[in-house]
Amino acid sequence: MASQLALKSRIASTGSLEKIFNAQEMIAASHIAQARQLALDSKPYTDAIFDAVQTLVSHTHISHPIVKKGEGNPRVAVLALTADRGMAGAYTSSIIRETEDLLARLESKGKQPQLYVYGRRGVSYYHYRNRPLAQSWEGDTEKPGVEVADAISRALLKAYMEPADKGGVSELYIVYTEFINMVVQKVRVLRMLPVEVVKEDKSHLNVPDTTTAPQVRPLYSFEPSLDEVLDTVLPRYVRSRIHECLFEAAASEVACRQNAMHTATENARDLINDLTRKLNASRQASITQELTEIIGSADALNKKEE
Image (cartoon, rainbow, N blue to C red; front, side):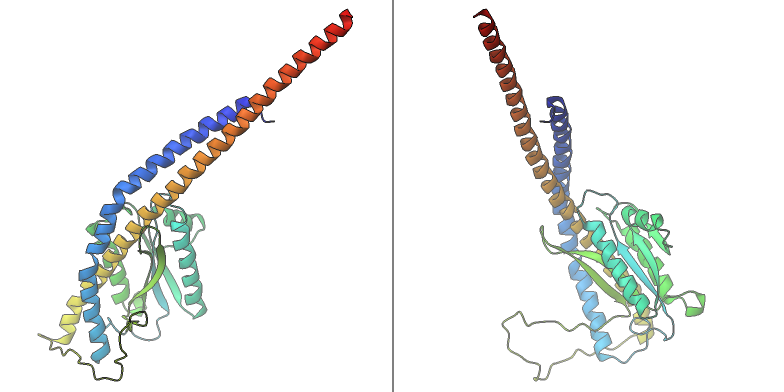
């Protein structure tokens, strides 16, 4: 049987961990409502500007960089949104694993990925493995502000608009975690530029098939010119998409941390209960052994007197 002193020490240390986990869970629970609301509030504007860009791409013959970049440039930019802190379960590891898969797929196609990372955990991971980073940002991954969104969007847009002979990239990808609900968060890979035409999937809805019916398409007129309008829309589009992804990632990080700390708290309590049972069993065995020794000694004395 394990010594009672060792069991008491383990119970005390596990109890301290249980208090830390419980405190972290309560902190995450207090932050999740605001993080979730910010993620929801960012969607209408981002969806509106994305729908407008999608419509332009679908129904306008344009050669602007927002929809097409010059051929022959193998360099692409990949932005990974990780966390600053740990205790969030598999949040950062899932992002890194998906990023590594994306980098491998791009390299297999002859691309030359340039990695951008937001979050101290991701930066530390790649620095430890001597992976060169084009640029990195740290701080406030749970509450990303406008400043960091602007800094990231400016860096990526500059890399995208640079010509190939000056080190520019031909594509922009973002790897982030989409907040579905408090239980489900999914890692997503978004190709932000050039814009891809995405057909809406309505197979899960009970709506009649209208693909054969004529659809009314919006018509656009551009003033003062198409290029000037798109030059104005492009930075707003990039900034809004990055800002939305940051809010989605922040809500997912807080939700993952709350779930992980809740599980850790429950596991600590189960471990304390298991160790307490072992301590009680050890104590009972010790008492039984002492009684057995006393009774044995008494019997030996009685036999000697006889």
